Image 1 (spheres, rainbow, N blue to C red):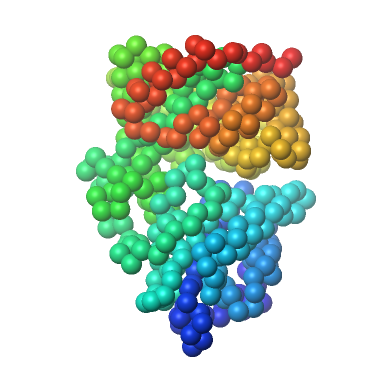
Image 2 (cartoon, rainbow, N blue to C red):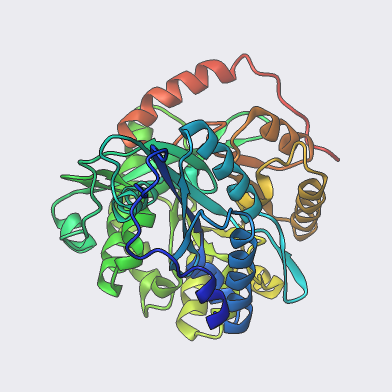
Length: 431
């Protein structure tokens, strides 16, 4: 990022929300965070990534008043100080900034739509806190955002007792203490309404900070942490499959996210298949989710060996976040990809946005030609669900169906869903 842009956002290292003007009786701090920065950095070269951050910085910087200071806290993380505004007025400004931050950006011959998550912290007189205290509150709120809340903006009151301490334990320590839990989000067939599986999502049940989403602890994870997390998520998912079977529910699959680092480990496939055999679970009941960026790393011999061995054994393989990277169609062919998952950035507003609709139709047509299934994630409204079903999407996942839940809660969900599904009309797949 150029020094010129950095100077634009330098102002207020020691400024307090309470200025000399006695009329200023309120203060809000808005934090906007660019999501998936690690994925973007892996798929964009340094020049393109720098251009993205500069364009985003310029867009947001022009959208505020000169006396509403702005600070860049980290690449893709912006703090806005909105002084002397009621919480309702501050929320209106925050919504405008949030919307402008997610405007499409022309980049390297293509158009990229940023996903921006926001937290607005508001405080009133007396005893207005410092900006740093408000920012700490907002950062804590952003760290606690669940996966399915990414891209949203929320207003929170200032909490004097809320701090954002660093995690004092590693993920490996948390696993040893049995604090890492697999929560499960259902996946539903658009044509029959039947449950096709659950995706396992990691949650840290922290003793002092409550339930933490992966975005809070994954950036700090070491290679050993990744290995331990994959192992515990696999074990908990296999136990969940056995629990569903024992309760008499028909849950065909459980999906587990596997990083490229894990896929690059020699013998990873053998270890995973050994676990399946030990738990007496057939390979076809486990879905291995790999990022779309797996395409560029398939030059690694261990990645190729692991994916081919898992596919040959019968494990299903999903290509996650499809449309956000540079997928190789050859990788889809040689690794036997069973399903692509449409990234939530294409799904949001698809029932009303013609540009989203054209993109979705193109992806669904590609999947149909390749003979693979398509699942849309991040489906948050009934209208989005209905549109995707009518356009021929095979499966959906998101808040419109259910939030992620502990395995015990899936039992009640399955009972309710099975009772309701019997009364739902099916939607014929578009020819």
